[in-house]
Amino acid sequence: MLANETGRKRVIAVIGVQRSGTSSITRGLQVLGVNLGNLYGPNVVGPDNEKGYFEDLEISHLDVSMLNSIGYTWDNPVLPIFDDNTKHILSAFYPIAANILQRRFESTDLFGFKDPLITRLLPLWNEVFKDAGVEVSYIIACRNPLSTAKSMQKRDDFDIIKGCYIWLGYIMASLIHSAGYNRIIVDYDELMKNPEKQLERTAESLNLKFDRKSPEFKEYKSSFLSESLRHTSFGIGELAANPDIPPKITELYVLLKRIAMDEISIDNIEAAAKINKIYSWMTELRSTLLYMQAQFDALYFLKKQLKEKDDKIAELQNLDI
Image 1 (cartoon, rainbow, N blue to C red):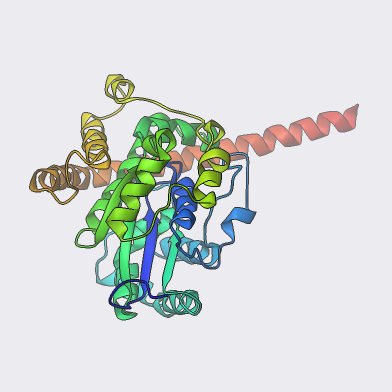
Image 2 (tube, rainbow, N blue to C red):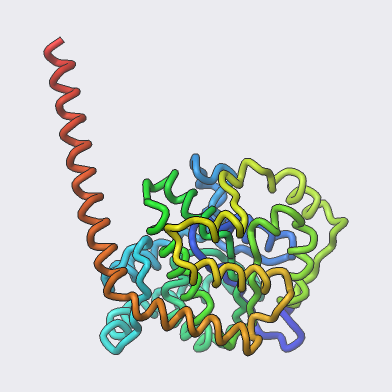
């Protein structure tokens, strides 16, 4: 079966920040007939995602290596600058990414995958897709930044403001680097509330087929999606009322919510102007965010050392007994 009328191979990538429903959205692609390829993720579960991560671990591990090679970790809220030096470093990974993509299309013309880390590396991956002659579409997973930050606080012991800036970094990377491509924003809370509507609009936007009466959708809706997946949930009012969260983050989420509700197009002139304005504001904060990340890394290291000492003291005390 061809991927579309032109017969071109297609890839659908779910991008966005961790803890924003990327796994649930990716699982929904199976309902729409998308081949998820070499999918290791469902076999990897944990207390923070008991239904599976739905990640292609080969792609995920490659993205970790690429980010680390240019001095970034997944939790750094600052966007990488794709200057000549960065491009030169990442060029060493290009053949590996191209090979992975080639192998994924050996048995299908329509391949989908999810990896939050790829969001920070889209300029390179866009080149990989282009050179392979692959048509790419993006699903931008979105969730209330306060919900995302609270989830990170529980899982990673991050403070709320750091979590919100991580959210901002990934969302801005998603929006800026997917511009000009076929894309759609899916809000996690709306997916949980009305999965039928969200899969329907996704299918329409990405030229896929959706059958609400199919056994696949019934299983997805009744069995896979459950409130146990959503450990935190906040509204716009709670986000706006939080004094620790910059108003521009709230402003951006309100805009994204409107886009996800189809009240305004993602490529609308008004939306683009607001996104670019917030992107400029974030760019001005670059040195501040870098300092914040450095202080967090130092504090994390000290906490780790303290825990190791406490564990050693407890071990010695047990020996004395």
